[in-house]
Length: 360
Ligand SMILES: Nc1ncnc2c1ncn2[C@@H]1O[C@H](COP(=O)(O)OP(=O)(O)O)[C@@H](O)[C@H]1O
Ligand SMILES: [Mg+2]
Image (cartoon, rainbow, N blue to C red; front, side, top):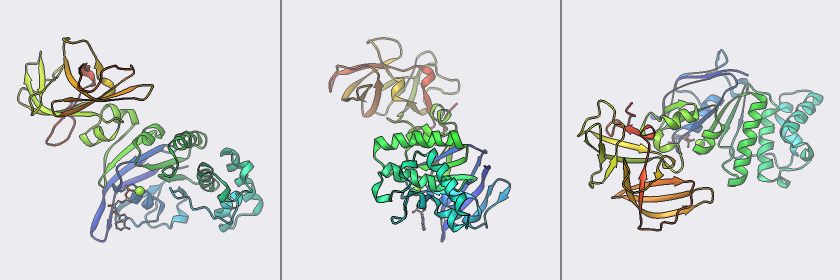
C-alpha cells in the first residue's frame, strides 16, 4: 500500500493541452473517484499514473518515489479497464495468474495467490472455465482478480462497469466497495457516472476540461458545491438553477427572473442588496408542496409527473424556468395545474452569474 500524489501535472498531445495542472494527494488506503464529463481528461490522467502516457509537466509520486520516468511494470500498480480483454483460450485461473507467470514466479506461489483472489471474488467454482462461458459480471470479476493477484500498491480502475447492465452495475459497485474495505489498497476509480462516484468514494474529485473543479468528501461537495459546474454535475435530478435579480428588503426579498416571475429569497445574507444579479440553486428534494398563501411560497405549473414508486418527480414551470421537484408522496395533480411550493432558507445555494462561484 502507498500514498499517491500528483503535483501540478500537465499533459499535451502535440501542442494541444488536455490536462492543465492537476494536483491531488491521495492517502494510503484511500478510495478516490475521478468523475467528470466525457473528454475531460480522466483516462489520460489515470494512464499517466499507470505509466501508459508520458507526463508533459509536473510530478507523480507513489509512496516516496517519483515515478515520472519509471516503466509501468516498475510502478507496482494494477489497472482494470472497461474492456477487460481476457485471453479467450486461457481459463479463469490462467487468466488471473498470467502476469505472475510472466514475472517468473514459482508455480506453487501462483496457484496460492490465484486461489486467494478467487476466494475473495467468489470465483473458485469457475477457475477452470473459459471466458466465453462466463457472464459479464463474472468476466469483470476475473479482470479484478487479475489485478488483485499482483497485490499492487495502487489499484487504478477506468470505467470498469460501463459495459454492464444497470442492475449488475449496482451490484458490482457494492462488490468493489466491499473489496476495498477488505483489502484497503489505495484506489483511483474513474467514472463519468456521478452516482457511482458519490456512492463508492471516500473522496471525490470532480474534473472538467482538464482541471479539478472541486475535491472532497462526496456529501461535502453535494452540500457545498464551490461553483455552478459542480452544483449542476452532482445530483440526479440535477439542482434547479434560477437566474434573476434581487428585489425587496432583507425581511422580504425575492429573486425576480427575466420574465418577471418571483422566487422567495429567504434569509437574505448581508452584502446581497437589491439590484444584484444572482443564480439561486435549490435541489429537487429540498422543495416541498405546501398550502397556498403561506410565507415564502411560490407557485408553478405542472408540466409532467413521473412516479417511480418510491418517489414522484414533478417537472414544473415558473414562467420560462423549469423547476423539478422530488417528493416522497404520490401526487394527484396533472399537467397544467398549479402547485404551491416552498424551500427552507438553509437549503439555498447562491452563485455569482459572472464567475460561476458560490457566494458564501
Ligand atoms: N492519444 C491522443 N491524442 C490526442 N488527443 C487525445 C489522445 N487521447 C485523448 N485525447 C484527448 O484528450 C482529452 C481527454 O481525453 P480522455 O482522457 O480520454 O477523457 P475522458 O477519459 O475523461 O473521457 C480529449 O479531448 C481527447 O480527445
Ligand atoms: Mg475515459
